[in-house]
Structure formats: C-alpha cells, structure tokens
Length: 254
Image (cartoon, rainbow, N blue to C red; front, side, top):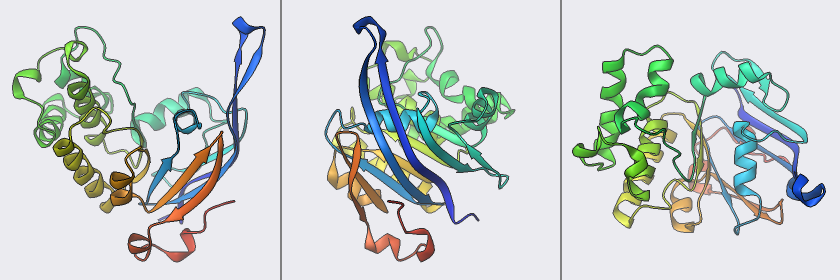
C-alpha cells in the first residue's frame, strides 16, 4: 500500500470573470497537504474560504492554475490530476475517484435507481447486480421504496442527497470527495451517513470531506485542514485514530 494516497503541492486557482473585463477572483492559493491511504481528511472554514473550489480541482471539475495533485491509483501508478489528459481523468472517475456534490444535478426522466447505478453499469457490472448494490444503500439511507423508480428531479433536497450518497457509496472508489454530504439531512439521517462513511473509511477508502458541523467532522476526520481566504491556516489531527495509522504518513505538507 502506498504511504500516501493523495499528495497536493502548492495548488492555486483563480477565476477570470470575462463579463467584468477580465477581473480575477481568488479561489485558493498555495495549498499543500498529504492524505494517507485510508484516512479521512476534513476541510473546514467559512463560506467563501475556497473549500468547494479545492474539492472541484481535486475532481478536475476545475483545472488548477498551478501546483500538482498526485494520486496513487489502484494499479500503483502516480497520476498528476492537474496535467493528466481528459481521457485519463474520465477513466479514474470510473475506477478510483468518487464525488458527492452538495447538490444533485439529476438527468430528467431518469429514475433514481437507474441514475445511482449508472456508474457501476458503465464499469461493466451487470445491471441487476448494480441495482442490488444501490438498493442496499437506499435502504441504509432510508430512501422510501416508492421513490426508487421516481425521478430525482422531483425529489426534495434531502431525498436527492440520499440518491447522491448511494451513488457514490455503491461504487468501489478508493478516493471519495464529499462536499457537504449531510447538509440537507435531519439529525437521524446524518448519524446514519456518518456510520456509513466510517465503515468505508475503516475498509480503507480515503476520503476528503467538507462539513460545517464540527461534531460530525470530529467523528470522522483523521486530520482537518482549516481554510480562510483561500489558504490553509491551521491543521489538526485526531490523535485517537491517528494512533492506528502509519506514523510516517501523518506529516502534513506545509
């Protein structure tokens, strides 16, 4: 197993607003951190601090201006997600990287079960097996059965979020990126999600998650990166869980 699953070095991102004559807005700058394989890295900070922009660069929804994102793949190769070809990134999204966005953007007239199972089917899993795997997470997330063949575009925010979570958790992704995965859920469902994420982490899935709820984050995170004004200003580790990880992998890059 690689010492680190993900190594981010000196990553920066700005946005150019062409409708405002090329005005440049800082997303984040000079971000560096390392995540050990099987660890949960939390990202905390106020709205506008650059958290979601960072996560989108890790998924390559946004392309960073500079720096590197070194991912160790299931095959043991190291890929820089900043410079990798688009085809490589698409393949990694099917095999290695999962993403839970804060808001589901469902395809119209595609039922929830089909939508959540689609990544598995694209990877070659038989449709019935893919559906069974997704259903197991629908049940764990208390999504009513009469919604499974419904259209998520008509669902409530909390129902959409559960479809989004089931879609990511049903995959075999070795790295999960989570942008506020519990924001639309009540306290009981939040506890269920924390349990599911903890189970995945304990099975060796590496996760990077944004959460505004410090209590939930504290239950999951092995390390927390605190962001302000587009920079990491403080780093913390969870000493209880950190004790069970390879101590060489806990140094967080400055």
